[in-house]
Length: 167
Image (cartoon, rainbow, N blue to C red; front, top):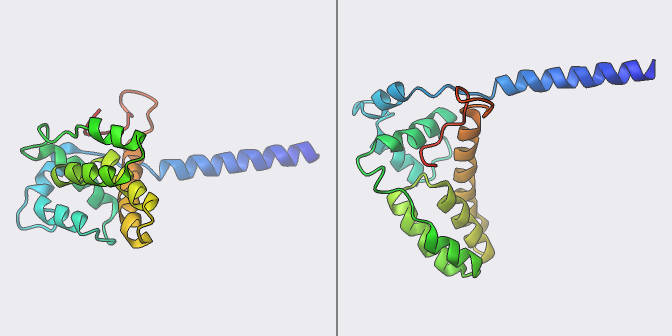
């Protein structure tokens, strides 16, 4: 009887986790994203969104992050601004956090959606004992972008792969 209760509880929680997982997926339609970010009269116009992103607007939604992240791939300098992280990795390995901050800022000036630069900017600011308000905004932005990517698919097949703008 006790084993039956445990089995029922396990199945119940497994079922709940499956239901909640299905609710954490978003559909990425690049044609829709492109039309939304190119509409100059809409709040979804890319320059307006990227300004809010760069201002660390805490009211950005997951849909806004989708437009910002995937919309970056429609910008003229998208390929040219693919981050070169070589110097940054070297600075991280040597624990030169001042150089990490400079390297991250250099990348973020051209490519504000760089996961690597946002994450390491927050980390370097933290390691240099900067106020929480400084480093947490980069970490929050990194987590929002990472969450978006995780919700873009389940990674179990080609059709349901996670959608990223750089490999």
